[in-house]
Length: 426
Image 1 (cartoon, rainbow, N blue to C red):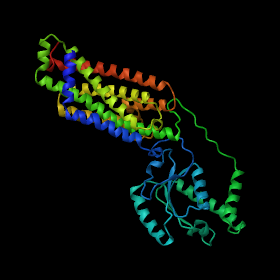
Image 2 (tube, one colour; image 1 turned 90 degrees about the horizontal axis):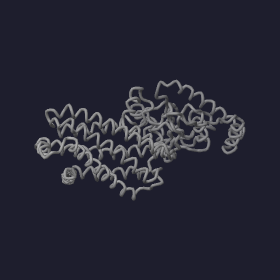
Image 3 (cartoon, helix red, strand yellow; image 1 turned 30 degrees about the vertical axis):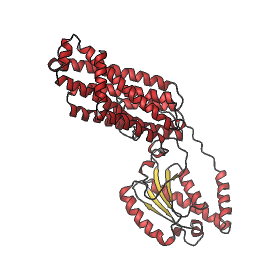
Image 4 (cartoon, rainbow, N blue to C red; image 1 turned 180 degrees about the horizontal axis):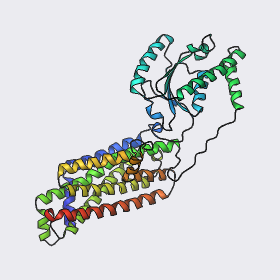
């Protein structure tokens, strides 16, 4: 059996495709783990009631309604104290998510052109409850005779909360207008008076509680979890095709009657397939070893977990997917079809497990299917590790053992049915 393992490994090392996945997936995984992107908008996280700042006018806001809030996109050409106060009050109401893009270089002459341009784009290519355009010099315009000159509000959906938004803005403007009159147009005095009034209002306190099926993550932990999700998705592709390449060797050996000659030499089918599984284990730890070298270029603190925990997660995950892809390739018995099946396995598991985007808002059927996918359990285990729960490592170990038992049981049963005509009866 040792000779079979060595020969399989030698054949693997001669495959250009094997080296491609062996090197390219750790490279892209390292790039993902090294990024500092903010993924808060994609997740239903317990973020504080703060305005979401956008990098540009073209940035979409469709994904900022993680908690079902009505999204308001604000084009702010003023960003003075009173406009800031108004937007914060809207955000703190609890019904709305304010997403603001600051346009400091925009003057009044170009403002109307901006409104026309953005309404056409936002109405067809984005999804939001309303769009608000704050003109330059908001406080000065508000102190004038016509309050409507200070900003413009456009409803872009049939969400009834936009009517509440109008009433909320009207109330805020009334308060600001009365205080501006009382303080003779002094913005600083007006703002101090408004804040004094707000201090008299009972404060709202939000307490986040852990539930049986959901953990409370901080903003940084949510970003770490999302980065790990993308990293696991890319790295899994290497493990999946590592197992498929071992299956290719088995398929070619079957066509070349290698197994028949091995059987005549006195080796049974069990020993033969066990040697291929050992080759898969070698591929798994080889890819994990390359990823371990890549961690030298990653900020460990930014990952949110230690290097041993990270390597434990990816090695056990790789063992499951490489073994599963090996069994799928053997059962299909065709090189091209096994490649398609492996890619489908990878994409469906990553998609239904929530590695790319959260699935909390999907149907019950999709959420139930996600529990069948290995990625789902590894992402949950990663979440436990991020919050410092030692059960994360134990859960991942138990999940790995369970999946390997299931794969081995179902795979051996299917191979016994298939081997009558293709692999022999021993």
